[in-house]
Image 1: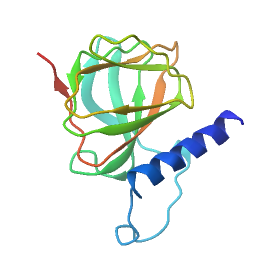
Image 2 (image 1 turned 180 degrees about the horizontal axis):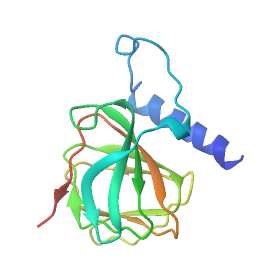
Image 3 (image 1 turned 135 degrees about the vertical axis):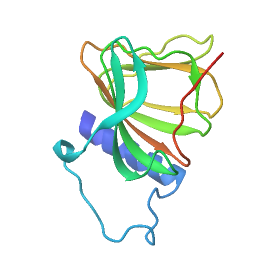
Length: 148
């Protein structure tokens, strides 16, 4: 199976497992968004190598359930942090690591998946020489809470 087919199957599995992200009554029409038409904006989450950028697919990450593309700069390492709600992520570009406190780093290349439980401290990294791109699905708004 090629990477695009594996990625499509994985995204479909996530949608089926988590419930349809956009209920029929929520969407006025079916949509298709070419990759070059996704508009990325700042998230406010920064390190010395740059800032996470978010591009909406559906919903609004600031207010509720959403599906969002997240672009992470190459060599970005987040501080230890939590999110209030669980989320599901698929790696579309680059190689990521999403490690909970005290666990070993597991490289996640293109087509990989992770689930992050809400309120669980973790570090997310882009270990590629090029930016990483993730697609996340979250049943509630996105927040970023630095751990103490």
